[in-house]
Image 1 (tube, helix red, strand yellow):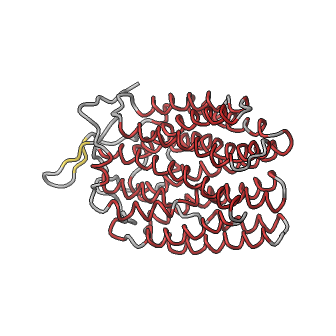
Image 2: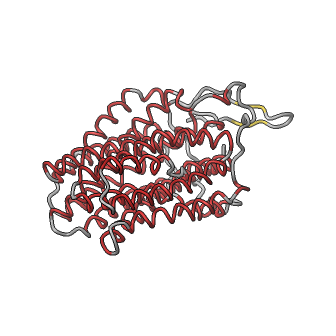
Image 3: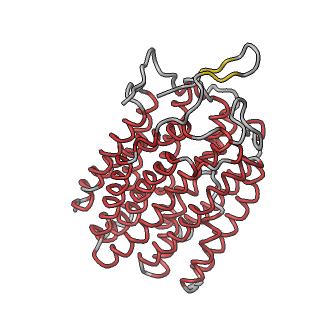
Length: 425
């Protein structure tokens, strides 16, 4: 397997943040991406409170996740074609209204089918701010040594939201009101999304062929690339970890009579993810991204397979930390690889396919883990992350050859006197 020869030191986060215009989209983007961290756990806690069933709560959250997974790539396509602002403005308005309706129906004791109906637009309208931020980084830094650092930084940011989001949602739902988590999520989406959409200067170009791309690439879907489909399976497994952990940790905390432990345990899991992300961005790795992805996924699969054996808070926290430490390498290298597989004109769509895959895996895991936790306890729910990562790992290893960078010329001309070297793994 090829490896990257590294000379010198990788550019640091400080240099990345000094990129002109970066802070203008990073700060509002942080607030606007909270839905992905708060929405599922907020729904689970509210619906479980009103129905008394983890299975029902998981099913409603699953509908939201499936809806997001189906519509997120379409949102990415529209953003690539018409611009991020045109997609984001109506999206945040619809999302805030849909989540508010879901809260009202749950508190009113509406039947489960009504909650399902409200969950569809709530999931479909989740703003794809994470992929949009990644697309802005790619537009600014494409072909520079800062791109891997940006990928690591985005993973750290995502995981920091997974530290803050679930803990905040749990604290609000258990300490203020069962609906407080979702209400806060809707407010953050609206305010952060509108501010992010206002940053038009850093919005990547849309609707045009990238310079030097082959004619006809403009309308090529990211899903048509075999390597993207392999990464989607890998990210489905990661989503199974997130969903299975959320429901099973909630059930475990109820079983031991300490509901507040849920936020702490999930926070430890997400903190491990964030710490690994920081390390990934700070170290200049010599191995190629495909090798790092497979090694990271091996560790993730082994760690996830041990979760069901934990019967104490301390042991579960330790195992959750280890699981989190292996997620970041898989996420970061997956996003790094996908940038080499698709043209710039399909980049936002590609990122949203991966984000949607995480949401779909999370939705399926929430549903299955919820049913298992209702019937057999939290230990059975922890089998879901083990099964999801194992299936994804087998697929990843079997089809790893499809993750090679797309074929392109060694040097692409950019007019007279301008030549751009093509990066290879």
